[in-house]
Image 1 (cartoon, rainbow, N blue to C red):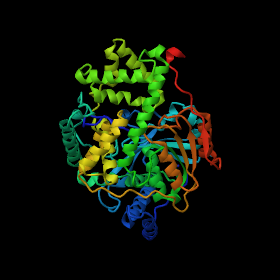
Image 2 (cartoon, rainbow, N blue to C red; image 1 turned 120 degrees about the vertical axis):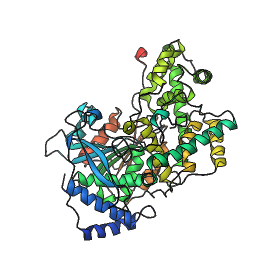
Image 3 (cartoon, helix red, strand yellow; image 1 turned 60 degrees about the vertical axis):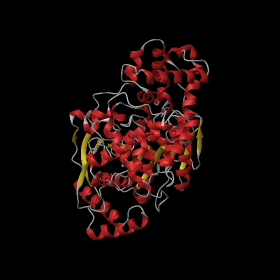
Image 4 (cartoon, rainbow, N blue to C red; image 1 turned 135 degrees about the horizontal axis):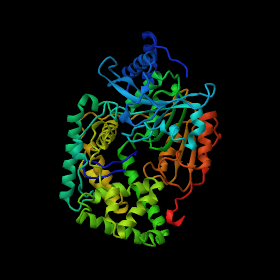
Length: 537
């Protein structure tokens, strides 16, 4: 899951064979079978709708062309669109176009194994940069690129795929925003008002028809239509963070359409976790990883001069928070913006040195360094690719996917108790998700993720100290997907493991994708290298 600066004034913490067009009688039979397998979430109408949409997409294919210049993807990456229904229960109703891009495999025709589709998380993240792993010559992915076309896409509502909105993007980037940690009941009342207004804005700016269809299950159905449009009989998939839940839902709805699947940094897919409890669990995990970072900063006090014990570093953090609350730096960096920048440290240890370095400069008197790093981008208002759009999709999917508590007493009780022990992210996360308490369209029942007949072995990769998706999520998905194998990176905590340099993991990921090879058992890897400050290297 990916967290963003919210309008509420807070930051929270988340594939070559051809496919022929199916005849109506075949589609009906397939849909009937799929409808029985989907359980309470979706039924025969949606199953029939995705079969019809996939058949149409297989017949139409994708009209690949050079990507528009303002999309930022260089040749030989090509772009196109795939048409999908807004509502799969009404496949002949309103439709939207899903933006996709692709780069051909770098190996020979004989080496090619199809297309590998990618989702980076969110909800609200774009996968369109995935083919750039080839153009930028990423060594980790070189062997996989020989075998696969790399395919990215903007999920429904994101970027170039019928983008949605919940608030004026100009308003979204205004700063400073309110301190996410409430001092008084009046502070809580103000945040509750903002959350309700944001939920109303989602309905007004997106419309009920689209908003009610912003679900993980529908995005999974979109992926199956993309698969068909690519001419692929089976899906090869890599999902990170929220992309793991999307992959798990796809595997549940379309088990016989999966060829190979890797899920990295796993969302707990249990129905009672989606999404309220998952967000509460994040608060605990973020605090743990924040503590890890503070210990690292203290270890390198000779470089950063922020305290030689974690307690001293924490005291300096609290002093900094209080200072920017009293007087926002540059008039734009208050506690919310500060948290938005510092939050990257518990997310990714690749950010440890960067965040500590900026803080160290500020402590030495360079206030501009912190303004440059933490202030919002006031030009980030280009509707279809703005952070506002990403935040809207995050909210729309999580709020529509599942039923959330509507009692403010429950939210207040749960978050007050958590904040007492895990203060780094708790209230920020609460306000980020509070629009779901007054959501304006019906909330669904989450998919019951499970192993469907015909599902091949799935490879799960997870670090034990991941903040955004705690380790228990990987264990739960491993239990639910029979035959899956789990690679654990022990004593590490970066979110997104497959993109890091760790041969124990990289070699196994490549072997699985290229050769279908697995260990036949779960594997524990030692952690990737801990960052070292440039000045200490």
